[in-house]
Length: 319
Image (cartoon, rainbow, N blue to C red; front, side, top):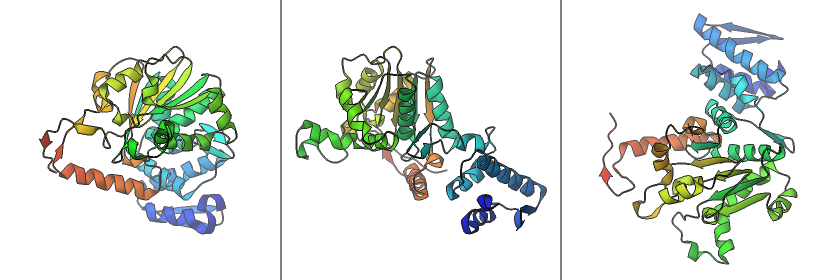
């Protein structure tokens, strides 16, 4: 009961706030009072929390809130099934999907050769793809991991940065290094990079290559042109898997150039063994304020006039 209610009844206070049924706790018993629907819903939430605890996984305030949210959505997949799916463990930390859409994304990576993960910042698109890549490498399903992203500046020119070409490019690849250090022992990373088992490189370095037996991730794909996207996708070799991630609302291409990530959704729609996974602000797993910020920007942009990639002006009106 202490594990269910949380330290100093932290989880109990969340349940009292989120559930419409009244909860009364005495010893090892919880009594629920309310309408039949309210009581049934509260019972389902408590059952899911207990199921998660029985797997040996502890609860957190975030987990409790996610169980309530997923139970409200009344999806066919139980919250406990989503939140107990282990992808990768390293240094006592286990990486798991935290929303139903994230689980669908992870499952799609298992089931398809090319997967597109499209959604706003903080939805775990790149992080979960990295975890699946490291998992595949450890299971010897692939021989190497290739991480790439276009070196497109957002308001600052590459030439303004000091150092050599590699020094200039490195800041654009830093998020990939950061995620990698979360999943692989830090002392192993330099060895894997030196041996070529893990390669982190700008998208331009992919041209002319055929990538066999590799797990390939293209990050920030909204900043690819149509030509670059075609070039990248045709690098696919035998025994390889590709994951392309990006946020089509944050395109930094110059001159209103059409984003390759937006175009590819129409070009490859319906092609076998390729799937598109859409994540939303409800799948944001960073600080909860990030989800609210993304939602606020979505509301603002929906109500504002805008220009498309070709510089054509349109008006959006909220109805």
